[in-house]
Image 1: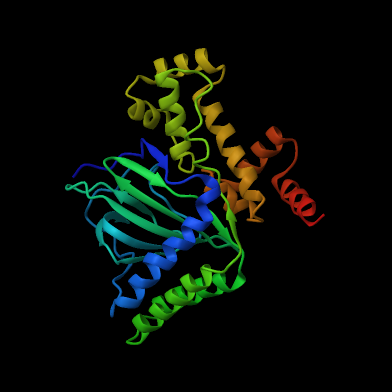
Image 2: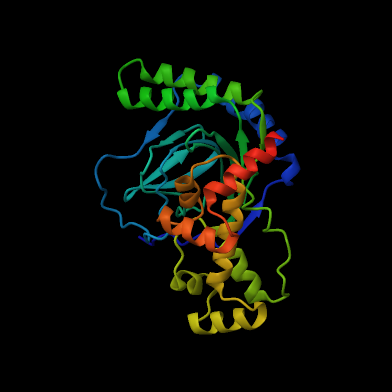
Length: 315
């Protein structure tokens, strides 16, 4: 079986300023009616045993330190769970536990289009966004931070109940899901993560290869990226793409990657996320190394940057 490749092309679903309202409309018009009308909700959780299907490259796997919930709105999504390929039909609810290796939007033989609403729970946060996959393109909606502690409590309660797995769990989990999405309709919300703000911005140099490299970096900065991954994605040799990119932009691809990661990290720190969580979300495996790079580049430690923003916002 062919191992899925990194995302090579992503587009934005809606203008950034429309993201919050689009999210509320999606929840009210699709998610809640879907949950209400189904007697039983197909709940999927990671298998406990390693499967026999070859894993994708370690650089592609996602392994977050927080709970993720995905609601498949329509179509069929392929999802890798520790070596197992799970077929997620429309109406399925996916619960991905912390630190579980996984890869959403895994290619299926029939190349089925699909849409998914994701809700993630970093420490003291609830962030939601919609995404879709169609004809080889990954369309991503605005990441919205929802400022309501009750949402965090509901997420934790939902996961605890799902882990118990007794005869009442499906009904209780359904109740928690309805309460979670119902509360999201009125929770204070704002655009959170700028990952896809730049995808529609022209490259500083009008060059097809430079543009392809920037798109790949913006699409995959939250994963560990090797030179071989980049070369495969743009179909040029590593030596040529590095030389060409530096001639056109004045920096190497990995200097550009670091700049992108730190730009996103600064926005994430304004959400009062922990430094370790921010490091993970922008592709750094070591929080201490992230802090060192951030301090050297920005001129202050990430903890101080976060404190200054919080103080500015209170004034």
